Image (cartoon, rainbow, N blue to C red; front, side, top):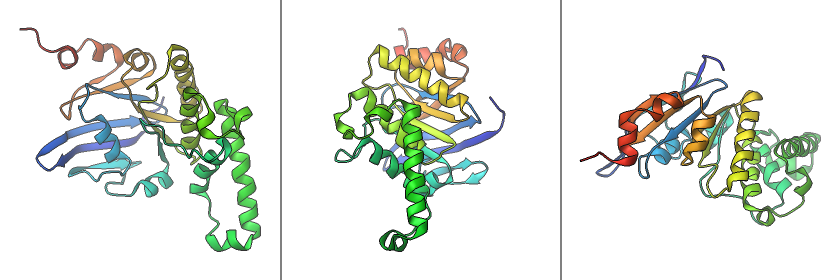
Length: 256
């Protein structure tokens, strides 16, 4: 785990009319680090994720990726810079195969233009071959290679999640953002997810995740940020966050 900060959100605030969903949030992710964002429902976790990935432009504050101010950039621009995310609700292309879903992710980094594709130029053919090869390598990594010709929606739920991870990897990101990756998974699938996230970290990826499964978060994260009512109320290593009185109060309420 390095000390180089690759993502930094500074004083990020997001207002929707009179509602303040995120208020002055500061977070950072270092290279080869697994960082979790937790908090009760409605704490502002997904909104902050959407700020980071360009879905929402923050009302105030800035987001930096490798010291580049990416505040207000589009999701497509941010993906090209080296960030990829998954969503809480699985978003696959149901009429495409597993392989085609991943190849679509690889295409976000290709250089051939529409004319190249129409004219079937050498560049287009070469990139298509490279895209296929990379997609197959990713599916071997995520354990879906044998199912590559199956339709995406024919996969069991846990494997559909793995397909989403595969598609995120397809854009050659440096930072992966997982939104509730364990949602809907059983205990065995969650253990497989945990092993997979460690594997990604060992391969050099940095990971930022939102997750409700506290057992998973506490077992895999290097550091954790806790949001409550849009504000970061605690941050640190799992053990210190677990024992923080403000965190306990946010989850369990204050004793009368």
